[in-house]
Length: 226
Image 1 (tube, rainbow, N blue to C red):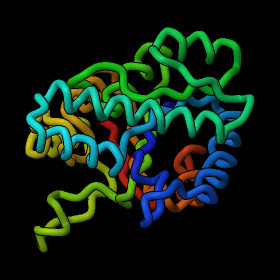
Image 2 (cartoon, helix red, strand yellow):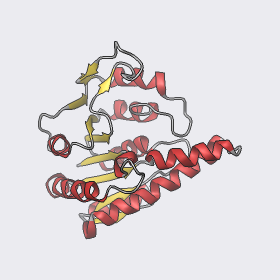
Image 3 (cartoon, rainbow, N blue to C red):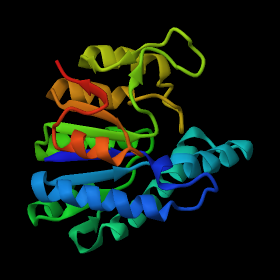
Image 4 (spheres, helix red, strand yellow):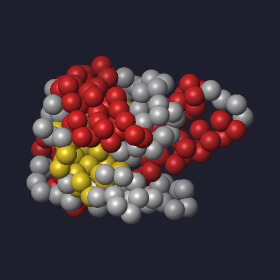
């Protein structure tokens, strides 16, 4: 069983419209993995969520309210992903629904669940609940880096790291605020560490590498395990 944390930004093109071709191609990849391994997908909010959070803050929304806005976007995104996957998929609103769907051989698709908890953490909670030993993180980055490569010229590409090393990366970027950018949030890192769940970070746009990562083959990306 593999739980997939799907970055919401992957779903949209540069014009902010849904990238329908990508969604169709991604769905084929996910369905193939589901047939072999059994999968579940948790979908993030992406740039759309960021726009709502930015507007909310402009008008005085609390961080809790900003989280609520972002969660609603993740749920809309996850509904679209579930539709793209056809009859195999089931849109779920909580972890128990997801587990029940998996027992029926279905592919559950979820968005965010609770304010203050990211979709990364939801992915980890589901992995713990159903006993999955791998969580694949699909996002717009190819590898984890020792720093932000956009601002830090000394940032190094990380191909293999331990759970504790990943946690230290998250400590520097996780401010517990809606739409904060960091590789994998601190709560999710600690959950992965306590249950010794292997994490695979891969560029979600490169579906050949995504397929390799989901099949446990060598792929271009970062593996986190002890």
